[in-house]
Length: 466
View 1 (tube, rainbow, N blue to C red):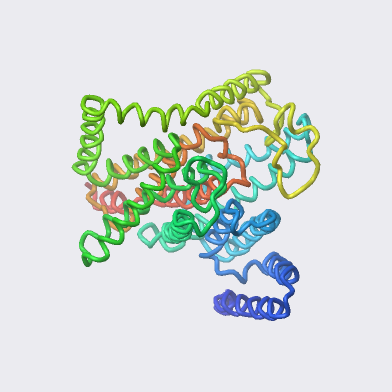
View 2 (tube, rainbow, N blue to C red):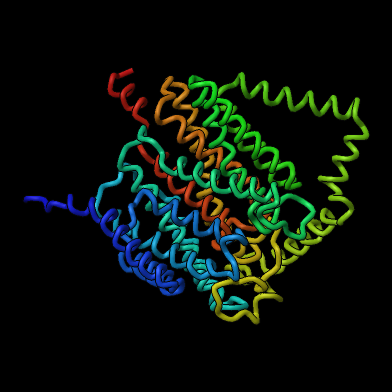
C-alpha cells in the first residue's frame, strides 16, 4: 500500500511562524498590543503544529519562567497566556506524535501517572473547592501528557542523538543570567527581600531555578576541556557567576539541591573529580570550624538564622502545619491543589494566589491533597526513573560506551535529582503554575523516553553470544 507524502508538513512550522509573526508585526505597528497578543495565542492554539516540535518545550519553559519575572509579567499579563501555551504544548505534541513512530516503549509508570491524574480529578468530588481542583488537575494532566509525548517525539532520532532539551535549559540559563546581571548592577528594580532575587520576585525562585541548570553548566565545562582557552574561561565564569548568585540568594535548600545534583553528575562522570569535590568541601568545612569561628558564626547568622528574621522558625511552623493537614485526612486528602481553610472562597481566575498556604514539602503536600493513595501513584514513577537512571549509567560504564548516549542521560538525571531534592523543602512538584514544576516534568519526559529505549551496547553483546 503506498504511503502518503507528508514531506510538505516539514515546511509548515517555518511558513506558519512567518505568517503569524507578520500579522503580529502589523498589529504592533498600529499600536494594538492586546490584539497582537490575542491573535498570537489563538493562532498557535488552533494551529499548534505550526510551531516547530523541537521548540514546543522551550516555548513552555519561557512562558512559565517569564510569568515569575516582574519585568516580563507587568500587571500579570503573562499569567493568562501561559495556560494557553500549555494547551498549545500538549495539543501540538499529540498531533506530532500521531505522525511518527517512537523509539521508546510504553511502560507501567506512564499508566501510574495517568491514574494519578484521574485520581486528582476524582478528588474534585470531595474537594473543598471542586472547580479549583478540576482546573489544576487538568493543567497538570496537560503538562504530563505533553512532557511524555515530547520525550517520545525526541526518541525518534535514537538514543545517541543530541538532546535538544539540554540546549534549551542552557538558553534559559542565558536569559536568567542576563537578568541576574541587570539586577545586580541595579538596572532591574530590587524587591523588598534582604537577599538577591535576580530577575524573579523572590530569592527562592532563583534558588529553585539553579539546580536545574547547574548540571548543564558542569557539562559545558567538561565539553570545553579540549576547546580554546577563551571558551573554557567563559564557561567557567558563567558557572561561577551562578554559584555566586546562588550564595547571594541565601537559600539553604537551593544550595543543597545544587550540591546534590552536581555531586550526582561528578560521581558517574569522573570518580576522581567526585573525590576532589567531596574532599575539598570536607577540608573547607574543617578549616572553617577550626580556624574561623567568627566567620562561621556570621554564616550561621546569614544562612540559618537569616539575620534574625525568624525565617527558620516560620518555615518550621509551615512544616508543622503541613504535617497536621496531611495527617488530618491521610487516605483521600482534601482535593488536588486545594487547601482546607484557604481554598473554599476561591473563584475562577487565571491565578490561584490566595487560594492556599505555602507548603514547604511537596510530598507532604501530596498527602494533604490526594492522600496516601494518590501520593503512591506519583511516587512509583519518581522512584522508577531514579533507579533506572542509576542502572543505565552503570550499564554504559560497564560496557565502556560513554558516548552520545551517556552524557544526556547523566545530565538530565542530575537535573532531575537536584530538582527532587529542592522539592523536599518546597511545594512546587505538582504546582503547574510554578516554572520549576514545568521544567521538572519536561526533563522527566525526555529522560524517561531515553531510558525506555534499548541499550545498544548490551544488545550487541547478546547478539555476539557473549
